[in-house]
Image (tube, rainbow, N blue to C red; front, side, top):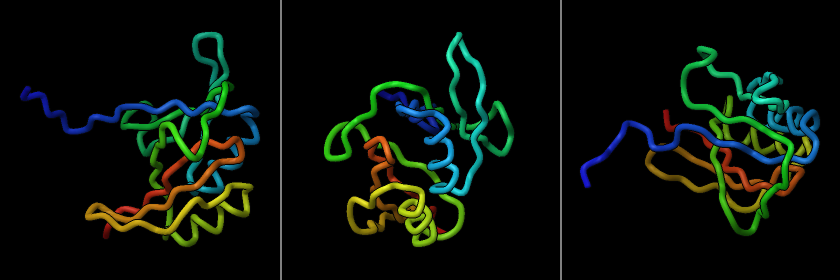
Length: 126
């Protein structure tokens, strides 16, 4: 196989129980903004990108959340330093799940959102 795209991850959908509460949590944890929209008869919240409608992003939808100790994890780029994002995450009702991990592209830490989904808070290397 020779298929090697620039990015394999093109979208993520995150199940949450309460869309408004989840929007508040993810805005606090990442330092970013989310926009609530109707799509296909369902209300979802998109993570806003620099150029709306372009770039790789994700959305929240009302559904059954995952488990923080197993299953899929997704990583979100955070604003500012990782330690500040960790503090915001806990203040917004999230739980840190481990220690900071450093890899060549940056640093991350796992957290559980208030619904129990496992998220990697990612700080890109300078």
